[in-house]
Image 1 (cartoon, rainbow, N blue to C red):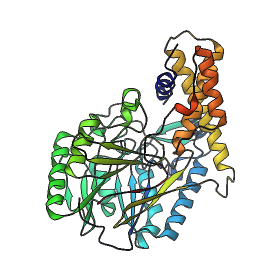
Image 2: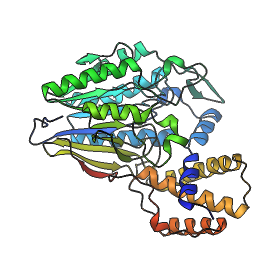
Image 3: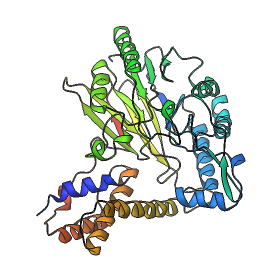
Image 4: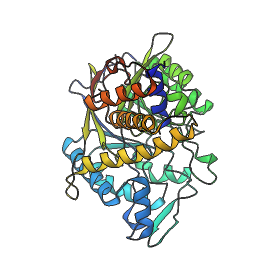
Length: 419
């Protein structure tokens, strides 16, 4: 007999303050992340682009239309603030940074303040590429210093404080709310490609804790954002997918929670998920992770900060003019990619199993992943049947109703208490 819950979760993961808001009507804040923007000046039809789109599951024209639709919605919503939590570009191309900045100009000119932080795909990428004709060719990337210069109007020029050791900075939302923007990337260690894993440098953590101490003395509420996850979003994520969390995540999450940080906005894992951790001292911190605009389910957040807390709503792009079946097509793409990766990794474990067991397990992993990226995972009939089939293959009795794959709270629409 096997512990079916532990087996399913473990193998699934083998796949890849006291102040008020100061505004009784609320501050509207939007979040987008993991855009992986590839400027059209870097692509042209040919074998190189076709190979890239096949390997990544990303259609360049579709992704540009998705971004245009999101920005059009944000122009209508008119948030006071837009947060961009990293992986702005496809792979660090300077031209993609320039193109993305131009995409934001209309929204910025209409009064929305935009704050960005880099992701692991944005700075000092040795293998940045353009896709023209038959071959992918090297493209110019940018340095840490160039990132701050390019995005001077997106947080860096008017920061309240800048960290000397990273691209972290502090921004003022208003007189009673600050945003602590963490740079968690390892771009100075890049050699042949980008490094997926992240961390908060010890000196940066000291800098952040000093800010949180100052904020507590002044009665200022501090929110945070970073590219990498601060808190686990599923069982065993830190064991099997540690590169999607910052190093020593438990220690660092507790330090920040105990210092007064309530919420951090993250990306990187391409899933729409919210999770909460409570430190041993009893202080809660929420990790609000937003899914990518480069993959199904094409999610972004519209939030309102009020005297009651942070109200979060999720939006999903389901169709675009050039692709009315966007959701179905990209869900199928993610299904196929997950199936290929899951099968390869399961076979790589070297555990003897029949073809029927391999297929049953792969089906469970694929269904779990498709639910997780959308958020609010609730197994449907097909999922329950897949679990039962896999349990039968293991000679185990399984009750799908007893499995919990989603940590509280709700993922897509929720109110988070802050005061």
